[in-house]
Amino acid sequence: RKRDWVPSQLAMKACFALALSLQVPSVAAVDHLPVWYYDEDVARTFAALTQASYCGPDEHLKNWTCTPCRAAGVEVVPGSVRFIERREIIQSNSTFIFLARVASIPKVPSFGGGCLVSWRGSSTVTNWIRDFQFWNTPVKTPWCDGCYVEDGFNKILQHVEAELISQLAEIGCVPVKDEEQALNTTNSLYITGHSLGA
Image (cartoon, rainbow, N blue to C red; front, side):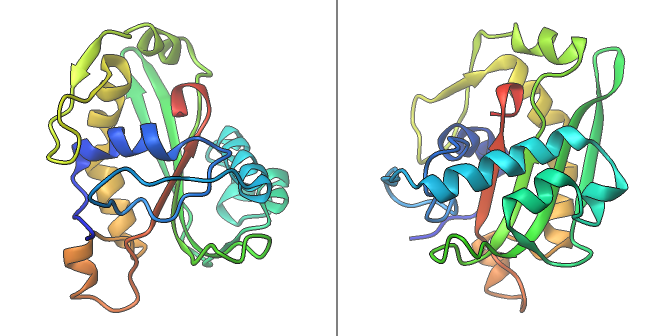
């Protein structure tokens, strides 16, 4: 049974879906935790997608011509790449995320398309400050009773979650309940990142 996306669940989904070497069936959720199997092509693809987040808000990333973009071998829906940048503490543009609607990954035939969120890892002083806010904060979800996420990571998610959900919807990435009402949408969500982004 598929579930709706709830912004606070994105943090927990990130914990499960960000392992670069795992084949993610669909992050849309299930009644139990999925079993993921190692797939070398998926690992290399998502490593390249993570590396692309370090390009920052660059025109080569936006038009999908950057070196890591080409290395990923992912077909992105033209015009779907979006950037999210946020101030953390005292530093502007400390948080950087790119998202896109992905048509296919030719090297991974089992990938049926979906939406990609690539979260840049720690690269600024304020990123490191958030990294060291490692005490646990409870995440209230019906599918993960007693789960916790690191407080610093959770604060960053809280700062971007509204824009993230809005930008995903703009490129046709919506929860199941909305997908059933809209054509040309998907509820498959793939999240990748490194360090802070993981």
